Amino acid sequence: MHPDIHLALHHARAAELRAETGTRPVTRNHDLRTRLGWTLIEVGLKLATPPKPATA
Image (cartoon, rainbow, N blue to C red; front, side, top):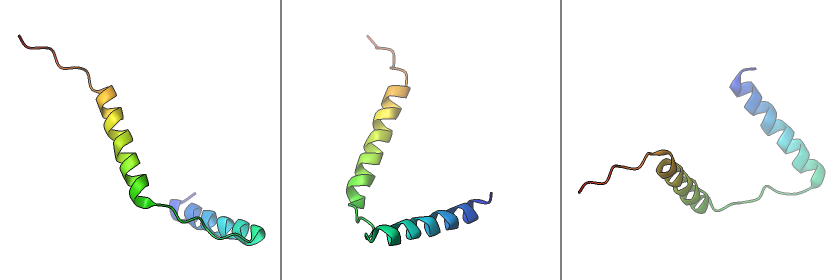
């Protein structure tokens, strides 16, 4: 399935589910999500990078 079609179907289904429940979409703090995401990436990169040899 083409990604654009899949995304359109997802949005349509999400709108249907919201209409059934009578709720509005939750607003989120995007700044917090962005900072958390980049922090997780930084930690992952530190864990994935082999340690540098110690120089005397």
